[in-house]
Image 1 (cartoon, rainbow, N blue to C red):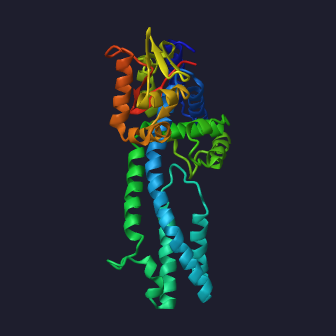
Image 2: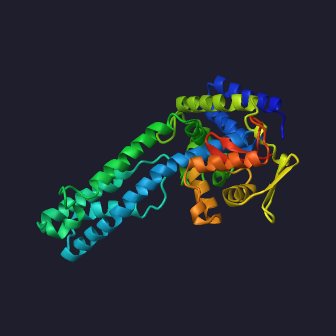
Image 3: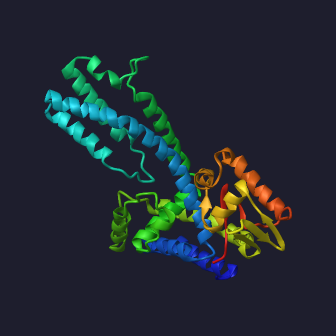
Length: 358
């Protein structure tokens, strides 16, 4: 691993070159170089991994709400399509709206920067209106309306998910992971680094956009209608640099990478730390068992509950953040970890990990 001083020198050099560049094409090449460096430098990888974990966690909340909307919409759409076929409706407007809705429902992946609910809701409403006007019978379309209010059954859910989508769109733009995401994509796809599976494996990033744009700028084209502007990338890099430098200077990760002082043996469920040893059961065993096999991976509360609970009796399941926090505190107490002493297992930006040196 390079020394802290060399990494900081390299990073500041790349940042200065980017800040001073006036040529449009060279500017984006330097942004990609900066991205490549942070994706490949061992001292920086844990820091950007934290950002990608935060991105997936925030995206997951909106994605799950959106999926609830899709799952509710799908049988309603099936009913409309069956009525179109049984009544023989075949005019151009009906065909057009049906095609729009069918195409959207066939797309399984959601892009991280997408908020597309209206593309589902509008053709659905249009189809319902067209069919309702022709059938002129509310009873045959009753399942699409609330029995209590008479409003569209989907309307409250659409409003709820729409608000979540708007909040997600607004919040992400204030997060450093949003800056990393764009720098990452330009570097990974433009320079063909093929690191997408490590950072954004749950997200369909549609590589064609950035591959196309990178070729565009290399040909000295000055603008593109589909990708962030030069000014936006200036802000992205500045934000990312301001996040990375103080954390590298303060050994933000280094202080936590003492895995040589902590060992866990699965065969006897025993942890060893600086001459102390303790055999664990229950939640302590489950947490150590899982994290010891996945060092360097950063987990949200939801992921800990998902992966550790199957290792426990149901009555002893992790239920919330406090359970995880209390379990970690108990592990440290049993192993006689001093107050304030760096410990390999810890929360970083509210994500739990067992950090380690490669």
